[in-house]
Image (cartoon, rainbow, N blue to C red; front, side, top):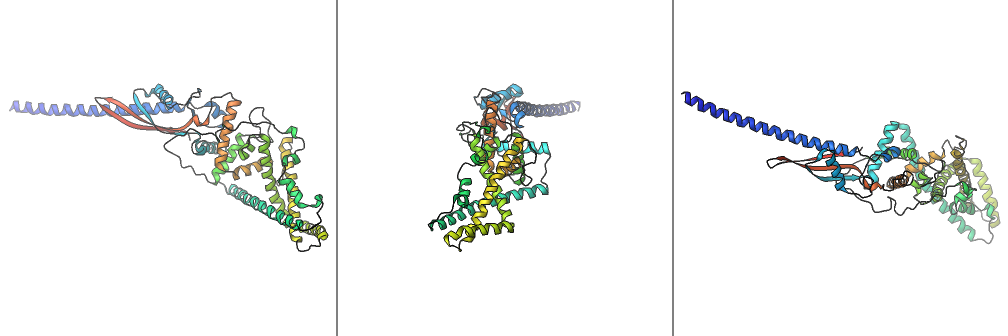
Length: 427
């Protein structure tokens, strides 16, 4: 009887020892898994702590400069840095990577929006929504005024071409409009060209024009809605200078103007912006003239006087509309000249037209601009400025990582492996 009990207890003891051994093995495997994942997570976080400092300091953007100041991009170098920070002994493979320039600079756009939100604590207030809606209306009106100008000048030119007598140039609304729309507006509103920046850049190899390195894998779903566009415009105004700012010796001085126009020289960019401002001012001036009965009667009287030489009373309406447009363009040119002279002379509010300064109008133009062009041109300027002003000749935005996923395989011993994924990114 005692022998039977001893055998039974021995079997129970063996089973218990086996169970305890199995539990210890399971615990060891689980702890090893946890350590492997913790090591990898810590290594990736340390990797992302090596952000490019000048990019953050000047533009508030986090990114890993993956060449590590060599100019030679390599994913292997990134994985070697992860190993250095504690992921040694783990087989690693990059599952996805997102670069600063991917998808027309979406990674940059997201961080720029987040930067301004954190700085200004902005929310989509009703008054901001109303302002944005007015800007969108201005954009539509500017297109309409372009079409109206074309139709009126074409009709008036056709009408005048039928007669044998020409209207003196000083009284001809076609010549007035043509001078302001087809010739250099800057030469008319900035008599002294010496005060304009003569800076020029080579744009053949900028980010918005060259073939870019591409990441792969996951993509974000950022809403490119109205408020994000408004916030991004604020970021651009916050980080880049314009024609009423202090001139720079290197790169472009009129950076906001470059974002809008994308030309290689400051003067070309300012010319494009000045013409866009002219259209915005013409819209407002023309609307004012249509509501001013006194100016309407004056325009009609002038039209009748000019057309008496043709004995033409049927086209007085066309001539009147052309005169009103010519007045709107003349006033618009004067407005743009005043806007460009405003902050340059540090006279706050003296020439602000309708309560808006030159920077306010730039804000409108930025909001109305194509977002992918604005984003990539902003990256152009960042590359140029960091290279020329900060001496970072190696810096290229498509070498900068903003999101990274790594698949790891850890060998736990006795042929057991553990596969897992770790990801990290700047937001």
